[in-house]
Every structure is written in structure tokens, then in C-alpha cells.
Image (cartoon, rainbow over all chains, first blue to last red; front, side, top):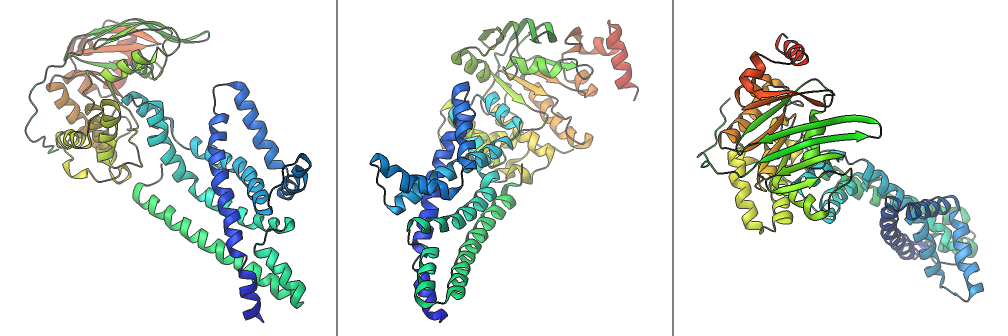
Length: 215
Length: 263
């Protein structure tokens, strides 16, 4: 039975990875803009960014998905299920990624900026060559952890019809009446993907740590 | 301590000259620095000593605007800034930082860059040097601070003393006219501190203009031309090193020197 269920459900792995990866990528980019805004010298920019981050984080992911997929068409903005899922998860990821970046930035000792200033490095060079690489190194484990969290959240995309792992598990359960086994297979697939992500990030983290130590 | 410096660099003429007048800094009503005046000739070494909280580091950090002074003027190596409680315009600030090099108590090497990259990155970004030029300068400086074989190492792999010597090389790579040292040996074991002091001593011998905040009384007396004693955010006295050490004029200086020399 498993030999039939596994390939049927594994068809969803591609879209699970696609939705998770794309959302993490877009969310990561928007998060960069957000963290810049949060640290902006302009009070109103800071306030808007902080408000955005807090609002996004307290609304449940499934509410976001429904809002975008079922709500926006009311204003003639009709999205495909995949587009809606990626937009929704990107918005959510942006707020969390901004917070992760922020804690990464806070971990950089003042001495690093001072040394850059004393050497006369420009603001762009200081951020690009001194601060960001170090902050990224600090943030990497948190980013991996969040990525795994997002992977699990992506199962919610099945509720709007994205054909990812959980979607196919539901289909299999209905068609074969092997509900327990179907969802065990789905769970196992999530475990395998998470393990791979965790192992890779751990390896990268260890390599960086061994090489340059922790600031 | 067998520090070899290879062939000693020829005595270069540094055109560093410092003229600080009426420098002060207040945070609201509290005054942390008031009316500091200091004129230094090229090649002169001045040590700044005094109890903690005297404003020594604050004074030094005002000179390259890591701290923003609220009054007074700073002239260093042709750069001139009139303090006004905010950062000067970019051109002046860049100029000021271009003519000063700073060495910190906590080294502040960039941990994600190799020793070579720590020394070449600023040259490439600030001076627009090519990779080859920058590496050539770095190799010479690494020899000078006695660490020619550490180019590929990351800072975390080095001892504190080695890190500080690299930090000195990094600052020198930009050919500053004046070097500012902010308690460069305070974070080091006394024994390790000696290797850093040896590098500084050589630098002084080569004619670098140096301003050194320090608790190393031997260095202050033997290497510096003059000693400036600070207390309570101001200058208590300044004079030739021997004189300040042996016959201080100010009561507070006498008290401080007695405390540090009697231990």
C-alpha cells in the first residue's frame, strides 16, 4: 500500500518546496527593506514598519491566505492558488525575517562599526562588507529554523487548493480510505525535508564557526 | 621577546601636526570634557594618563569623531573641523578620518575577514588601491609587526597580542598622519602587552606622530615625549614625560601617580 501512496503523495513535494522556497526568498528580500525601515532615522518610516511587522505577525497564516485568495477577487484581483499562497507566505515571512535580521544586527558589537568609521569606510561599504556578512552568519540558524517552520505552514496552502504534499495526502485518503497511512506518509515527507534543511544549515553553520569563531 | 622587524623602514617624514583648542563635550547638562587644548609637532608622541572617568578616551574618540564634541576646534594633518555637536559635512569628516588611524582596546578586527583582507579591504575601499597594491602594502606591514605568516589566518585564530598588532598594521595601511591609540594593551596579559608596546615603540622611533591613552607608565615615561594628565574631563597638566613623572605640579596628578607607581 505504501508503495502506491508514496509516489502519489510525493507528487506534492515539488510545490511544497516551491511555495516555501519562493516565500522565503521574497520574504527575505522584503524583510531586508523592513529592517532598514525599522532602523531608519525618520520616525514615521520606523513607525509604519514596526506596525506592519506587528500586524502581520499576529494574523494567522490561514487568515492571510483566505484574505488574499478569497478576498482580493472582490476587487478584481484574481490570483492563481500558487500565486496567492506565495504572496501570503511572503508577507508573513517578511515580518519574521525582519525580526531575525534585527537580532542579527543587534549582535554585532559597536566596535565593528567604530573600526569601520575610524578607517573611513563609507556607509555602504560598512553595511555591505562589515555588518551584513556578520549579521547573516549570526542569523543563519534562526533563518533555517524559520524556513522549517514555513515548510510546515505551507501545508495550509492545501486549503486553497495548492497541490502540495498535504493536498495529495487528502486526495489519497479520500480515494483509498487509507487515511492514517496517507497522512503518515505526508508527515514522513515533511520530516525528511526538514532533516535535510537542518543538516545542511548545521553543516554551513559549523563550517563558519570553525573558520572564524563566534564574535 | 624577540620581535624581528626585518629591515627597518627608513625614517619617513610624517607631516602630522595636531592642534586642538577648547575641545569640550556635554550631554545635556552633564559635561564630560571641557576646554582641552593640545598642540603636537610632527613625530611627537604624547601619552594621556589619568584615573578612569577622566575623559581620556572620550577626548581621543572626539578627534576622529567617534564621539561628537560640542565645542572647540580640531586640526589634524591639514583637516580642520569646528565642533558644533553634530557630525561635520562628509568631506571634512572623511578628511579627518583619512589623516588619523585608530587602535582600539578591543582590537576590533573584522572577524569574518582574514588578516590579509582586514588590511586590504580599507585600502581598496578608501584609497582605491588595486588588489595587488593593497596586498603588497599588507605584506610589508605584516613583516613590520612581526606576523608575516598570518596573512591567511582569521582573527579568532590569533592571540590578543597578535590581533592588536594586526589592528595596528590595518590602520597603518592607510598611511595616517597621526595614530590614536585607545588603551591598546588594557585587554592583554601584561606579558602579551609587551609585544604590542614593542611595535608601538618602533613606530615612535620611525617618527610617527602618536597620541596614546594608556595605563602603561613605563611606556608613557620612556617612549613618549610628553605626558598629558587628565582628570574630571579636563587637562590637569601636560609636560615633558620625565618632568611629569618625577615632579608633577598638580596635587591630583601626584595622588594618581603615587597610586599607580606604588603598587
